[in-house]
Length: 73
Image 1 (tube, helix red, strand yellow):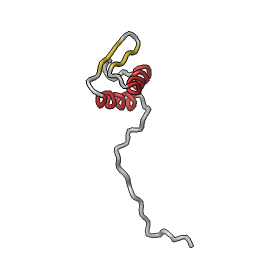
Image 2: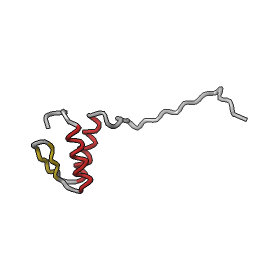
Image 3: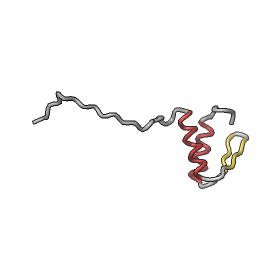
Image 4: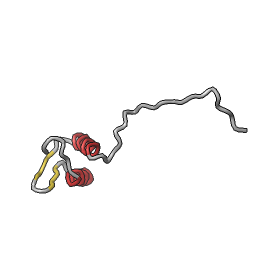
């Protein structure tokens, strides 16, 4: 994989291998063997984020309060 140039083909192949329970992923003319399922899941999430398939959320929530809030009857 050259830099951050991931493809949907790589993403789908990785998901397929995860679903099948194998540590080896083949896409195009390349084969990659991962060390663990955890490593595969981390790489899958990285690829998904770089392809814009998942929202990058920083986990921060903001509460908004107002003194003029009226209670409904």
